[in-house]
Image 1 (tube, helix red, strand yellow):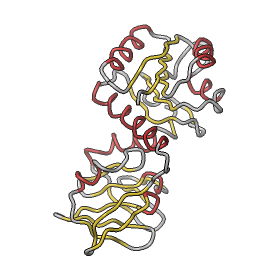
Image 2 (cartoon, helix red, strand yellow):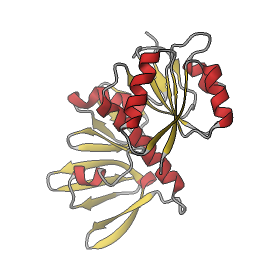
Image 3 (cartoon, helix red, strand yellow):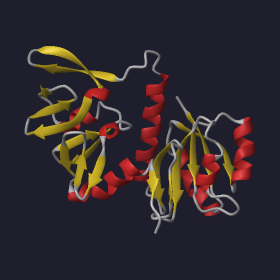
Image 4 (spheres, helix red, strand yellow):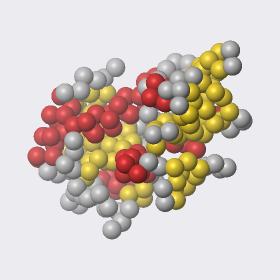
Amino acid sequence: MKLKCLIIDDEPIARKIIREFLAKVSYLELCGEAEDPAKASSILENESVDLVFLDIQMPRMTGIQFLQSKKDVPFLTIITTAYPNYAVEGFELNILDYLVKPIAFERFVKACTKAKQYFELKSNSSGEEFFFIKSEGKIEKVEFNDVIYIESLGNYLTLHLTQGKKIVYLTLKSLLEQLPATHFIQVHKSYAINKTKVKSIEGNEIKFEKHAVPIGIRMKDEVMKDILGSRVIRRQ
């Protein structure tokens, strides 16, 4: 499965960097480039696009304004900008991730992996959003939406669910490798969370309806970008 990608950025060097990154990722395919939203709109009329790499600051129309005008067009967006604190709210605009220039290739790949997992889940004919675990001598089905957070306790994990808990003899790393990054993220050496269950973030804690987990100090910047990047872009 290849994802058809569109780059929208008024800076030629920025487009060149993304273009070169795209060429290194086997499941990405460049279908167009645009230096402004007007040209991008023309491309979208003639091409089926899965993933858009979009700058925010552009002449005549910002990237966010462009997205607001394309709410009915089914593509995911990865924001690429030199302004980490540029401002505006993301009104359900299918923003998947938020990359700050200069963009490291490893960070670029991480964002693209989320897109790949999203489309793989979407294309799954059975619409599966669950996994199986071996717990207390039996195989049990666990819905993604039932998981609030995962706690590592040495050589086993506790899955904190909407209804109770499950003990699994796995490492946190091995479980997360089998779960989609679109839903789950590690936030601390001993905790991973279901992003859809987050109610608030206060200081170094992520809060759910009835629970809270700590954010690792070294992980905080990456966690905040991952969880908030698709929803809020804050004003300076």
